[in-house]
Length: 493
Image 1 (tube, rainbow, N blue to C red):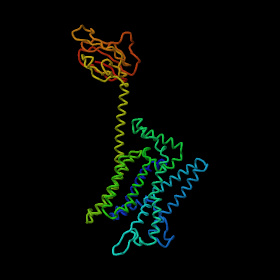
Image 2 (tube, rainbow, N blue to C red):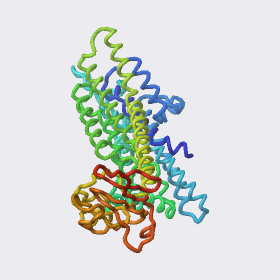
Image 3 (tube, one colour):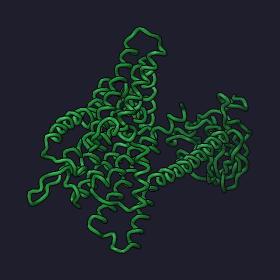
């Protein structure tokens, strides 16, 4: 089950893509290149649940025209769906065990999966019932998908009423059902991700908190798990994104039947709809996993390039020669690897970036351990004024030298000026008030700074933190080097 859960979002994106791309040849009334067409027909046959292909229509009725195919492909799934809803209601409303209610949730999940699989094909079937072609010279009007059916005949008018009812059930009813089901549980499906992001100041932390709360609500209210197929892969704030995705597929499959069929304008309109979907995917990035966001957006670009290739063929820019047509065929096949290649590349880049970030974190941790979380690591020129040392020991100004880090050390600093007797003090600076520096007997300096242990203190001053030892040896001008130690920093000439 864990493996299924991991591959489900990837499979849904590929299913949606092939449901749309596989039907473009029919929607555009365009003969696609042979290799591309065979590839698409094979994949689409595997991913689209076509009830008609499993039914012996010839055994049921002597007529097997398009009307009866439409009847079979729409009524049978509707009847199966009604039985599944009845079973779900029976199991969920009875005072049975938790196992029975869990089974009820699984049945409802299968029902949603079934609706997802059959919706594009059934919608195309019912929409195509209204696509008639008029002939000149008074030859009448006939159904484009089956020229044996007269659009002015009584039989077609009866089946047109049935097709209208099925439009209410499938292209309108299924997305509306998704919306109502998700909307009713919105408080539990999105427990305030935007609010959490604002309060925590981080999108990542806001998402993490919202997912945690949603999981807790799922455990407390198991009945919402029946909708997992619709929302599980999306962020809490985009829990209802399937309500956008479903009409998008319908517009690019059955809806294209009514948009100037067989013309270049029809393909251009489809490309514009595809571009709008690209923008939505790029702006929303609705999935929890960033890799899924990348794949879904790449799939929209892949679909767009297929439509662009179809437009080239429609206006006959693919060339007349057999060699040009083969080149177009190979190109359209190669396009089918765009989305997977983009996802794999994005994954590899993410892995490399993660490795680099981890190395930086390890280096930061090692540095923190080596310096003890404080201490100085600077070179100080002996003889500079106290003001010039502003902040070198962690303080914000010359009055607070040494307050900033655990390696500061609580010492009094004295300045040895020129022209004075050796060891004579001329100026005493404010006391440095860090913790943890270990004192050492200061020696004299002809020019520079001298750290003096405060009178009456032991060799370890203050709280004995993680800082290193600080010593000042005899200095006759030059650099006071702060060297690294195992737990902080020590100052030596």
